[in-house]
Structure formats: C-alpha cells, structure tokens
Image (cartoon, rainbow, N blue to C red; front, side, top):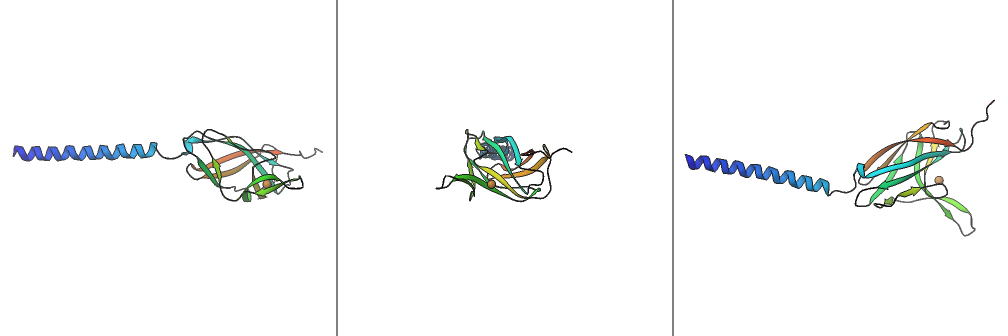
Length: 165
Ligand SMILES: [Cu+2]
C-alpha cells in the first residue's frame, strides 16, 4: 500500500515537472520570438495633402524597431483611400526625380530608424474618399511580418490652405 502511494506521488511529481518544463519552453519560445508590436514604434507621422480637394496624399513617418531582429513592412491600407502603395523618388537619366512604386516589402532593421520623408520614400494614398482639412486625422494600418497590424491616426498637413472669404 505504502509503495503504491509512493508510486502515485512520484508520478504526480513527474507530471508537475512536465508542466513546468512545458511552461518554461513556452516562455523561452515567446521571448526568443521575432519583433513584436511592442518593438515597432511609428514616430513623426503626417500625411501631406496638397489641397482640400486632392485625390491623393503622401504619408511620412519614421519606423523604429527596438527589437533584436529585422521586421518587414508588408503592406498598408486606409479606410480613407482606395489604394495605398509604397513609393519612392528616383532620379532618372534626365536628372528629374519621379515617383516610383516600390515592389515588395520594406525591411525595417533593428536599431536604425527606417525613415519615410519628403523627396524620398513615402506611403502613397491614392483615391482619397473624402476631403480633408488641416490637422484632420487619416487612419492608416501598417502590416508588419512579425509585429502584425499597427493602426495609425496621422494628422493632415495641407500644402495650401483654402483661401478664407
Ligand atoms: Cu507617390
């Protein structure tokens, strides 16, 4: 009887140990995972819209990756635009800079801010579905390979204010 009880206690101990091992393994797996939403921060964001009647806008911001591994910006969308594309400005052989669509995803290395700025990379919002005033907010969702979806509420900067009457 006593040895039976000892046997049961031993198996119980083994069971607990297995659970702890599983918990430990899961914790290690989580902490060793790639960039999470916490490791990606979007700073200094705004959307340039030339005039209140403009049908397109360009979003600029800095992506900071405080994680230990690179992440990738896969795509973006906005309920205020029919399409959102990654664009860059490239200088052609004629010396004139033109917007070009960036095909594929954008790498966001750890430590170095990935900057979208005027005259360079930007998020092109095409087919704005309404008109915007200065400081109105445009909702944009960025989708990262590891960090997942990050929702932004970026203020509009109008290139030209409507003339007051
Ligand atoms: Cu563009």
